[in-house]
Image 1: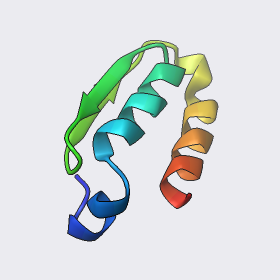
Image 2 (image 1 turned 90 degrees about the horizontal axis):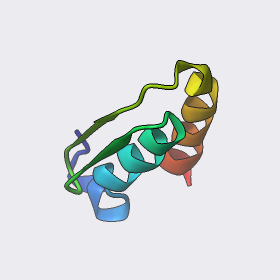
Image 3 (image 1 turned 30 degrees about the horizontal axis):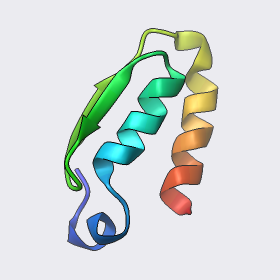
Length: 57
């Protein structure tokens, strides 16, 4: 879930989609709510780094 302030700048769906793709999966949703997943656990650290980068941009 992304609150009103953050969802004006970033879409939760786009954030989750980019993270899920790193993990070999898929994801998406609206600007405020999204879900996703992946199967490649070996990419976990890469996904965390990407999440931090995307959120803090």
